Length: 149
Image 1: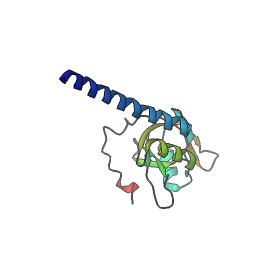
Image 2: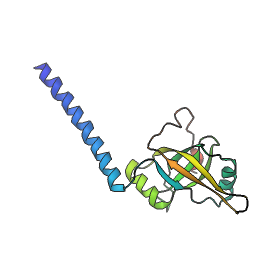
Image 3: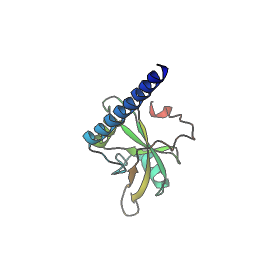
Image 4: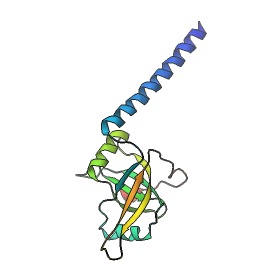
């Protein structure tokens, strides 16, 4: 009798996990995203972001952090792990898709693919590659209070 109960509970846990995985896959299809994603940083004309972009290099680790603020419920910052500074934010449409997929307050990994502009151009920008993982911040202190101020 005990064996039957254990098998039944094991099967219940297995199917529960499968249902959860399939709902994530369904959300992913509904949002129309596939990883890795490629996009540009927005809002880069601000002085503090330009300073951070001037110090950035291709291959720098980034973290995408959802932080709803006032009239911007889908605000997702692009945070440089190496520089400990914000480089910009994601476009509203992509941010909406990611918040729908991962939920409020998510963090995801990204990397700088290319720094654009500078020199003869007035502003710098950056192209980024977004991953589905959240590994870059595990070994660091995650004190991001300044994002909430």
